[in-house]
Amino acid sequence: MRDTFAATVNQAMDEDPRVAVVLAAISANMFRASAARHPGRVIDVGIREQAMIGVAGGLALAGMRPVVHSYAPFLVERPFEQIKLDLGHQGVGAVLVSIGGSYDAAEEGRTHQAPGDVALLDTLPGWTVYAPGHPDEVRGALEAAVPGDHPVYVRLSGTANRTALPVNGRLSVLRTGSPRSAGVVVAVGPMLDRVLEATADLDVTVAYTSTVRPFDRDGLSELVGAAGNADVLVVEPYLRGTSAHEVAEALGDRRHRQSNLGVARDREVRAYGTPAQHARAHGLDTEGIAKAARDFFLV
Amino acid sequence: MAMTTAAALTRYADLPALIGLMEGDEKHKGAAHSTLDVVWVLYDRVLAVTPGTADDPARDRFLLSKGHGPAAFYAVLAAKGFLDVPTLRSWTAFDSPLGHHPDRVLVPGAEIGSGSLGHGLPLGLGTALGLRARGVHRADGAEPRVVVLVGDGELDEGSNHEAIAVAGRLGADNLTVVAVDNASSSHGWPGGIGARFEVEGWTARDVHGRDHDALYEALTRPHPGRPLAVVARVRS
Image (cartoon, rainbow over all chains, first blue to last red; front, side):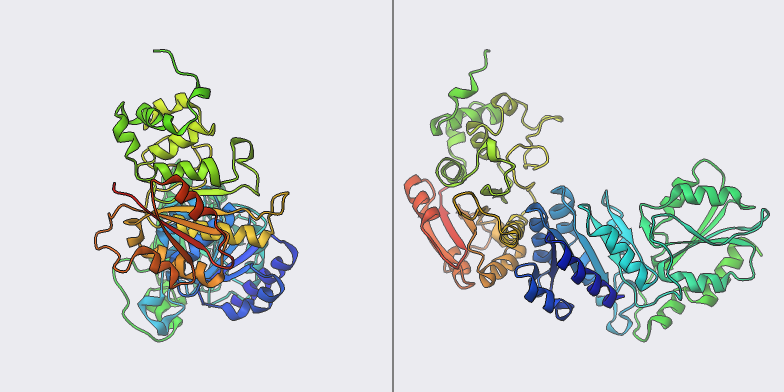
């Protein structure tokens, strides 16, 4: 996904003189050719993440469209006040593109992991958040985001689904349950393939989105209305329950149940290894999702 | 009481009265604002920006990073016609555009919202780099400049030092910082504030912060290839 991100943004730089890239050393080699072609429009501030976001805010104030990129903890958590003030409070936007979300950087340990990135941005108004599940969805998200002016977060992932789906802001239905179905499962981004496998023998509707914010409340309401039960299981690749309030809002007009899977809130998994091992530790592997789904849907 | 006409309140000597509309009628207090003379000299003699060019991409930009105590800034904006004088009376009311920290979305002429310290310099650097990347120039060929006002206490914030290093290394000579030094930093700056900028590739100048001619000279003498830091010393 990082290669698709770089290719898409490099192409956008050739086509749109407003586009600038702001980096803090990470991935600088992927933008060297653009830096040579477009002087002053690739700005590597070195390992200075506060300046990275502040400079992006200034570029936006000067009429540019900044694309800002680093590891999620250094892009979102370390300069969070800059995101709040230098973008939001100034009334300008930027496209923030992260790598290393959740436990993608498993071997690097906790310092390089930020499962709370989307939940943090959720405390600020006006953000569009994409969690693409396929490189083609990265391209789709960026092609929607870069021409605009508003704040956008694109969360790249080290894992991808087999097939890309449209990036249109709406829930895509992958499997439709019967009128007597147990409920609806919402898979976000790279969770889709394992959700499909984990729920293969359940009578449920499976829907997918890579557009996390704004969340498709109307779409969920409609799918739940057509299901046998107003029971919703959301499987997200970041902090557990990040979208719980969206589901509650979407279904606020009826009795419903919901359950959320994601990265654990109640403990730090102090381990290295692989992303697959971390997925297992958080119950986000196929077996973990299957068990949680059976328990929740009471089958 | 009848409102004095706005046209009359346009001089330096009127600033204490304008500040008095916000903070109460203590003229000596108004004149004591540490930023008053710097902001006045900038808008009166240095910056190429007027209410008529406030949206011109090629205008000069003033970023009040040290958002505390903005009455002097609001007073200058009013004296220069960016703000209506009667608006000053609404200062800090719920529906007033004028709070204890400026909000660019609410205050005509304010380039940034500030208050939390250490944000203006990185924003100013980004603005300077953005204007340069866009190739923005005025009709006479002049490149617009970006002037950021920080306080010596504000320089405690590490974000400033990130931006000072980057601006120096990138040779952003369309960027100027005015550091108003009223010795309010908790731990001081041994060797002086200017030295922090010089070592990173800036031109630094030290002036008395109440001396209008010295401020003007320091702010306008060329500094090719290097961003400019003017340290303006004041007592309060």
